[in-house]
Length: 336
Image 1: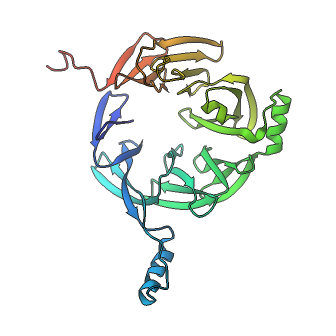
Image 2: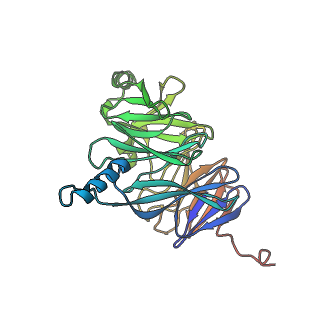
C-alpha cells in the first residue's frame, strides 16, 4: 500500500512491515505487481483532447491568422509508472481535468478512471493499459462501477440498467434489466423505486463482489435494502430488506463482517465497530476516544487496519492483537 504524508508518500509492504520507497514531487495513484510498480501522477497543463485535430487546427491558425480558433490548453494530470525494482519511470500520457477513483482489473493489466464529459452528457472513460504503457479514451452513456472480470466492466446505464462493457471489443451485453430489478424488489417486499438503485463493489482477493442498494441512503448511513449480484449470470440474492449502513464502512471479502467508525465527528468517530452479519451481533473492536477524526477501517485478511493519532494501526478480528504499523514505535530495541 502507499501512505500519504504532508509533503510526500511512502510505499509500505504490509506483509514485511517495512517501507519500500518514498515518493516526492508526485501523487501516488495505485500500487501493483511483484516486484512492485507504482502508478503516480503530476499536475500539468496539457493540450485539449483530440490531439490530431488540435494540431491540424494549429496549422490552419498559422496560415489563416484570426480566423481559426484553437482549443486552449487545460489543466490536467500526467501519469507515470515507477518500477521500484529497476528504479525506472515510464510515462503513460495525460488526462485532462480531475478524474475520479482508479479501478484496477483483477489481473492488473488495466486500470480505469472516469469523469463527466466537458462537451457532452456522456461519461469519459480513460483506460490505462499498464502492460503496453498507454492511455485510451472512450465515452459511455452511464457510469462505470468496477471490473466484472479481466476484460469487462460493470456499467450502470442512464436508464437504471446494468450492462457489461468489454474494453477490448468495445461491445456491451445486458446483465440486469430495469424490469428484472423492479420485479425482484417487488417480490422481495421492497417498496423502494428501482430507479434509485446503485451499485458498489468489494474486492474479495480474486474478483469484485457487487451489491445493489440505494447508494444515496448508504452515503447518508441510513437503512436500505442490500442485494448481492451473483456470478456468472447476474442472479440477484436478497441479503437484507432493511440494512443499517454506517459511516466510513467496509465489508470483508466473505460478506460476513461489516466494520465502521462513528457517524459524526467526535461521536465515536475514531473507534472501530464490528458487526457479524450472520449472527446480527455488534461489538466494539477499538474503543472510541474524544478524538474528532475518523478511523477509516478497512479489512485486511483476518484483521482491520485503521487510522489513529496520525498513525496506521492493525488489529485482529478477535481484538487480541493491536499493533502500530506506520510510523513504527521507537523503542529501545529498535534504536540498537
